[in-house]
Length: 281
Image (cartoon, rainbow, N blue to C red; front, side, top):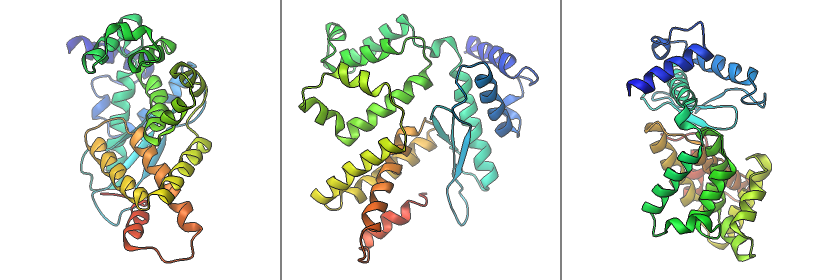
């Protein structure tokens, strides 16, 4: 722990040279520090200038307030404390994001051969697979091994951005559909590794859920409730939130499209789901 704290102080001194490492997380101006941190990273070309730090506050007539912050690249964090003002929620979300951003700079958070070996062994221990599966891309262990090796040198936040796409494809049923077309896991990984999670991909996934709703009426409302609950639980635990937030956004888009095409009044359950798009506590 002492070595980790010393490494964090060293990173702060490098990236935020005019800040006192001992006071960084006590400073109320953590919002500006987070922005400064990522601007510094972009100047050093660790991340090309592909975006900025973006905040989102959920509409609410009163406390507790919820705020999300999305970092360049797509990683998302939220306030995990019960906040009595929007400004407090924003600061708390920024603090969680800054802590994770700094930890992401540690050497132990970068994908190396040693890290891959340890991760594969942990994956084998938590499944019914074997170490031999790591060399077979047709197995889940082998696919995971291939993904890690394809991202050698990247940080865990960078790798998580790619993993989020595959988590969504699995949740959406797209990976199963691709396997049925005889596409290998290696081919699927290579293909989707070239793409970012953008409006086009979200729209395609929303269309898939519209089809699911037509086949099984009510499934969208059910999935949205589950996604909102998972998002809230993950936020309160201080976890990275993009997977849960993207699920909510995709399902919300699907519901909005369904009911924008309909002139009939909404059933009470579906009205509840649409209301939930504006916030969840």
